[in-house]
Image 1: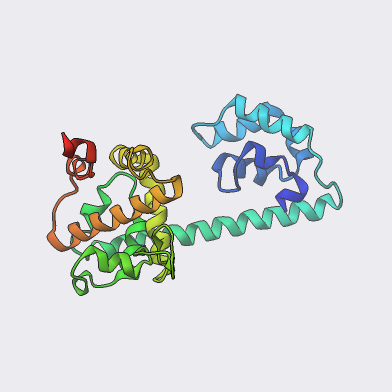
Image 2 (image 1 turned 90 degrees about the vertical axis):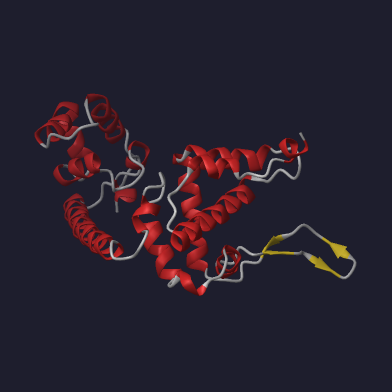
Length: 254
């Protein structure tokens, strides 16, 4: 509905989850309503709510987008009603999600060594709970390669007859576990210095450098091995050891 009535909103905010944007839409659902408020009125909404991180600069940007909006102007009263209902529904779902995450956090505290994984910068509650839900009892696995196979990240040869192609991952495994590990890798590369260093090493090494996507998969497999070590041995996450474990052929030759 926002995309129809106020398509320029996405240029100011990435999505409807932005708190400051939703505050304004609740008071002024349509571009014409935002224009009537003006930058001062928009900023007053945020000040009254004591919201940090939003000020006159953002308010002026939002009002400017509203002034130049090419959104639909048909049936404005119906559009206001529908947008307000949409925002109320979003609040309900957000509240339910928060309650669910709190319950998950309490349940996860009962599982050994969960806190050790949560200490890794870039690893959150959703990643840990998703991993546990897909893997189950870690004692059923003898080594990380079995988990790698379960996730569909096992390396297989791409060959047939006389043709020998590059090796690839099998994709034969649990899709959700593969997704959890991949998302964890993306988060770690963005937020965790040592995993970012590993990612850069895989992409820039002289022998067999990986493409970006391949490197992210390699990092995901590294995450899997770290989780396995923590869960089976109860060890603490060691950033220095993680970086030093990278196989560097040029250093080995030296």
